[in-house]
Length: 229
Image (cartoon, rainbow, N blue to C red; front, side, top):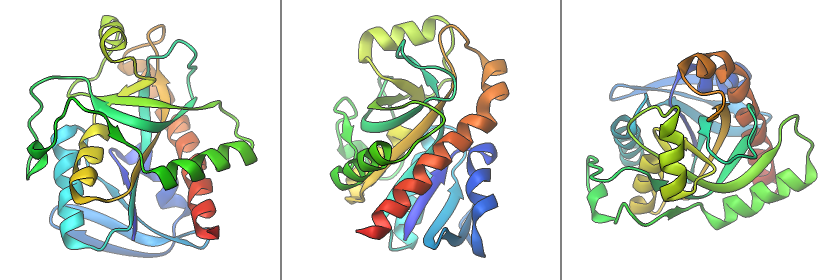
């Protein structure tokens, strides 16, 4: 199973709209949508917002299904000064940008201060996709960091100075953490809704639909590339 995890409805909607041969299934409190996108079999789930919800959902699904890879798709706040609204980041490495992170299950067995690496095969195929396909937005590869709060204003600056990410969110590190523990290949693809110059929830809500579509476009091409291997 290729599992696509999104935090919220807007991030999942492009996948659910495109999904064919749909079969819905409940797993604990989670609702999975199994089906195909352009002939590729996938399962899509919304994990909810935040590190703990993301970690719990990921571990629950790993315990319940045979998962071959996990792709996280969604939106993020841009930190790198090159980024514009709508640009996409493909994770090379993922890190928490907060200390004293507490997660469920056995997640604490890993050092949360050491970056989690995106799966090499997934990353290689993502680079092929970007080289061989035109996208309406710019696509970058780099570090994604995650924390428990929505950042705006000086929050961006503090994280930038300490951790130097391309972008920030509230779930990716937790999902990467759980996948690392369970030895499940993982990659994240996030597009920008807000930046230090255009920060805050108003900008997030203004841009979340298009940013989610931009991430979807890259994820679908990646799945097709993997299918051709």
